[in-house]
Image (cartoon, rainbow, N blue to C red; front, top):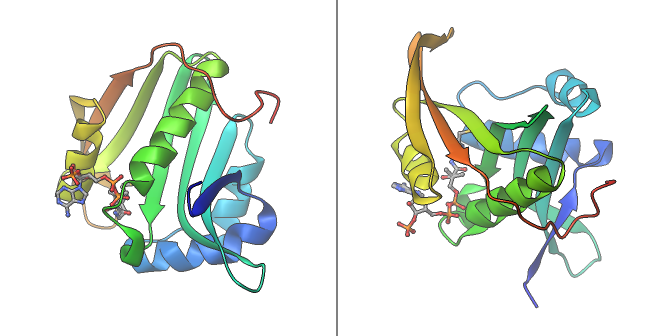
Length: 163
Ligand SMILES: CC(C)(COP(=O)(O)OP(=O)(O)OC[C@H]1O[C@@H](n2cnc3c(N)ncnc32)[C@H](O)[C@@H]1OP(=O)(O)O)[C@@H](O)C(=O)NCCC(=O)NCCS
């Protein structure tokens, strides 16, 4: 059995996720943005938790995406620094893609900062290709975004589709 578990993010998980956000992103989401995102139609967020000895669940990674018609839009994926490079993001991404596939998605799109080499390498490894560029997509720095895309084959999710 894996030492971690995957779960749907609930409102009570937001504080832990925001802590990871602040560790990873130059412009982290605030509570209102994340809460608002969770209430949007078609928005889903999964987290990876570690079982702590006191029966608490420690969140170490998360993903946030939306399913719009037959497209999955990956908004965020983050793995706490201490837990990077052991395959957690790949696992989260694959489970989210399977989940989206069961809900009818046939393609995944995402935007990534052109300077974010680790993330671009990560997405390439998962089979994403660069299909476009959005100039000055990130207003705080004026940085361009690359648009990446991956076709989804039909897959079966470990989550119940009605989740
Ligand atoms: C990108 C990120 C999610 C990857 O998470 P992870 O759990 O470490 O990734 P995995 O262990 O599943 O996959 C590792 C693969 O990612 C790529 N990768 C990860 N870190 C990398 C780095 N520093 N440099 C180059 N490639 C890297 C490699 O292809 C690697 O495969 P390899 O180990 O065979 O070389 C993580 O680095 C992160 O949270 N970054 C900060 C947040 C972010 O930029 N998110 C993406 C934009 S929303």
